[in-house]
Image 1 (cartoon, helix red, strand yellow):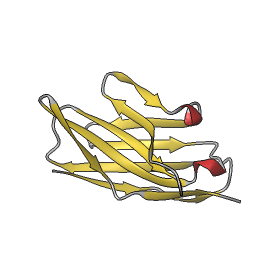
Image 2 (cartoon, rainbow, N blue to C red; image 1 turned 90 degrees about the vertical axis):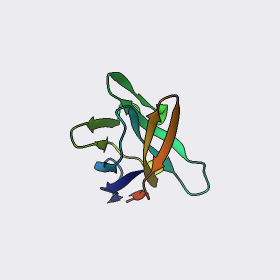
Image 3 (cartoon, one colour; image 1 turned 180 degrees about the horizontal axis):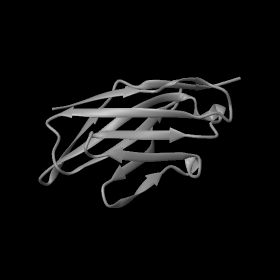
Image 4 (cartoon, rainbow, N blue to C red; image 1 turned 90 degrees about the horizontal axis):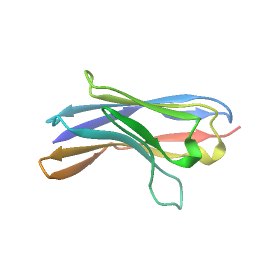
Amino acid sequence: QVQLVESGGGLVQPGGSLRLSCAASGSIPSVYVMGWYRQAPGKQRELVAEITSGVPANYVDSVKGRFTISRDNAKNTVYLQMDRLKPEDTAVYYCNVRAYYGGNYVDYWGKGTLVTVSS
């Protein structure tokens, strides 16, 4: 099992910045992808960004150039730096770890942290 604890959400004005953090603990395998998803009211959960060691990070088009994902493998922590935030970025953000065990994988999810972009 892998446990995920998120932090860093809150209320910010348009154009502002927030930094989300997610720390993973438990039985973490050597191969895993860390990422952030979000779900806005009335919409499906979507991938925001994901990162794997040694591979360029992947971003949804709507956040490219504004958000930066990074990870600290020593701390099993993933970060999402969100700059130039827009009202449409308002959502609950979920941390995800996709842990690979041989040929299979298991998705683990955090409880979510609310990001509200409003003046």
